[in-house]
Figure 1 (cartoon, one colour):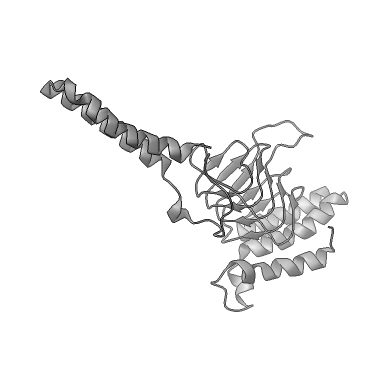
Figure 2: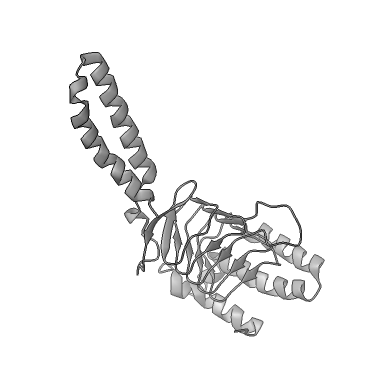
Amino acid sequence: MKIKIWKQIKEDLLTPWRNDPAINSKTELFTNYPGVWAIIHYRIAHKLYKNGWVRLSRFLMGLTQFITNVDIHPGATIGRRVFIDHAFGVVIGETAVIEDDVLIYQGVTLGGVNLDKGIKRHPTVKKGAVIGGGSKVLGNITIGENSRIGANSVVVKDVPSESTAVGIPARIVTKGKDKSQLSHNKLPDINQQLFIYLTKRLETLEKAIITHTEKELPKKDDELEKVYQEFIKSIKN
């Protein structure tokens, strides 16, 4: 549903009250929320861009980048009540599409992997998704509704709705509705699981060679199999 730009801006000014428990006064909107002002400037620049004022819109967003350290192309499509928390280092490309009620943390890139003009090169982030700090979402892929991307993940494939993806490259680690927006302390560490397995496997083989206790390997293999299964469970879609 399309709404007037001033109503959108009013919603943008209210988003910190919905998403950030740290806000205490309206004055803080002017001093502590560069993401809010980047979005507001984008609203104006996007309107200019759509009406053919391309150079002026790019100039406005270039100035916004200098002030807020947020780089949003005026051609991007950003829905209602989108909140960029802390915001520094956020990059949103020309053909990116962000639907309503999306939460984006600092250092996020919604970037492209194709240099061809006239095609969609950037991601689509569906309604209610959360993109963790430092994440890179690259290419014409889709982050599903209410999905969560763990901090510092690199996403190069579609993420289904109601899912959590972590890692480099990102893998789906949980599916299903979750009332919490993104509990990083509860996410499995898939790199740790693999490191534990490889370390224990190497330790077992070295010990067997040195002590000539190859007969004990089957027993050790059973123990390692449990560790390996934990790793598989962590990355299983």
